[in-house]
Length: 359
Figure 1: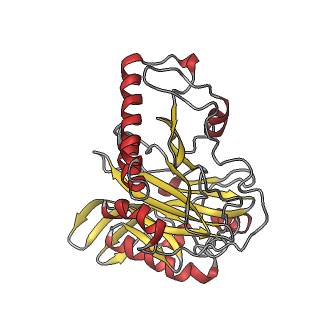
Figure 2: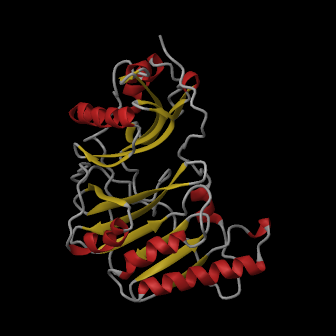
Figure 3: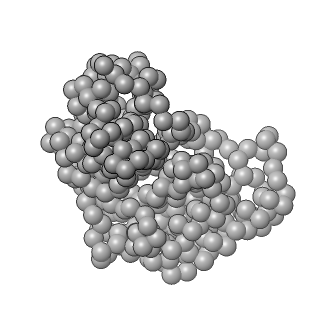
């Protein structure tokens, strides 16, 4: 019999800002003292970069090599506690994804991410440093972007800090009216064009390097939503797919969300509780996924499931690569008494496509 999970806590759900692309395309620059803006804000994703057939798509996640541009970009973030990986590649380029979980006073995790795109010759082409979800400090985007960009362009980091600091100071001083749209600024140097606003964060586009076909693969680790939805229904989730890409399981405070390319799952997020009594798991995974995690490809399913179960037994988090698959587990422990514990886990499988939401 299904056992409700009653740990009282907010749970992280990926925030889908559905108006982001429209805002980026439609808003006009707001003139602020000390701020300038490019004629058009950069679109997310850039036009046409995913409108191509498979081009040698490789969705096996890999550690980022220590040398080369990829290693230089991500090393400052890794040293600051971020998890970074090469999450997919194709014949034209490769995508890197970095992430750190920021906890608030209520122990709720809000992720901050950074995304990079390199061409097949290891040259920097594009980056996005989104504004963190939830409550965050004004300078968190600059704190992530500046050291990463400085590693490849020594003068770029100081300029990023200065431009964002000037923009935020002017915004605090002058404010804005709703009719004026989203305040934003932009600048350029010999390496790249930069666009920043507090809603979307910082987008960096290299001036002399581009990737025409961005990698989009996920078949190594994920199946399709249409093949998974019946199993979710069997586990007590309320799902209406298509078109719904989010499901809830109210009796256990569970949720399941996906980012898709067509019907193919690219990333999945779900929440599940854990109740350990006398050393045994009393809230079995099979209560919510009676046929197992069938949204995962069979080749990775057993290893990823075991990694999740280890975190459920211990009530601890994880960020890493399992069987070539990005696995992120944010754990919040409730009552703990000896070997007994109650916890809630927010789990992400796979990294989203670069420049798409949720991040």
